[in-house]
Amino acid sequence: MADVKWVKITTDMFDNRKIKHIRKLPEGNNIILIWVMLLSLAGKCNASGMIFLTENIPYTEKMLGDELGFEESVIKVALTALESFGMICRDGDQLFISNWEEYQNVDGMDKIREQTRKRVANYRSRKKQELLQENPTDCDSNVTVTHDNAIDIEEDIDNNICSSTSEEHAQTDTRKEDFEKIYAIYPKKRGKSRAYQLYCQWLKGRMINGERVKLTNRQMYIGVRNYVRQQEREQPDQQYWKNFDTLMGQSLLDYLEEERQTDE
Image 1 (cartoon, helix red, strand yellow):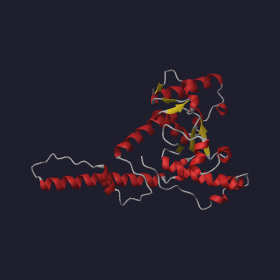
Image 2 (image 1 turned 135 degrees about the vertical axis):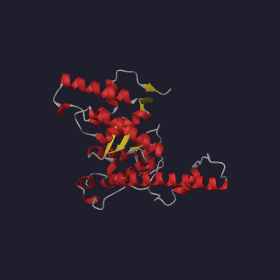
Image 3 (image 1 turned 60 degrees about the vertical axis):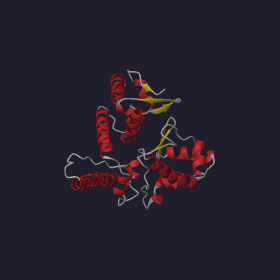
Image 4 (image 1 turned 180 degrees about the vertical axis):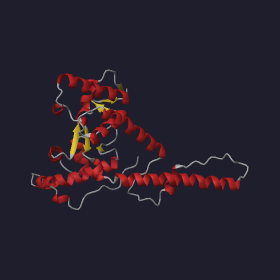
């Protein structure tokens, strides 16, 4: 999917208590600038708030410093401060914007994507009619929307919105349904948004100790179920359970019964 061209920042951003506290810290104003730049990077990655150089190469603090134009020491201070205020999350070498949906007009994007789907369908229909008029006997002609055609179709859509195909939507819907089944069996309902980001990453593969590790939906379900059963036996008080997003991180590997997939 292409990068997102805009993110939402409220006009009262600098009235936010977190922002006020951060600005009073050493390098405070630089931390705020880095925060906004991280939002921009997350939009470019367009991976539900995850920030990376490529899907296979996460950012190191030095790489971020080079990318954003700051000393590595300033980046380190900024990431520590932003994480302590819950504005970013780090899981191993993975970096996320917390609550990424707050910075995206999710409903608006869904509406635009539906409009795009209809425009593509109308384009196909129109082209097929044109072909039938040119070749009345060729009733079985198929129309293919090429990459260039798709660009033409979407020219009048706000360039700040990323569109995707109906096939991608169907895949996303299925993925969300599968995730919801896992979420349903976990009683401590905290960290759902970030947990879904982690769920998607496991399906694609995450770099763990230099090795790309993939988990299937079934493996993740089993891992969560095993943790729930363990806790019900050993620690019934759910206040001591992991938040769902914490469990869906690297710690999930501790509760798998099956061997995980790795890429050579």
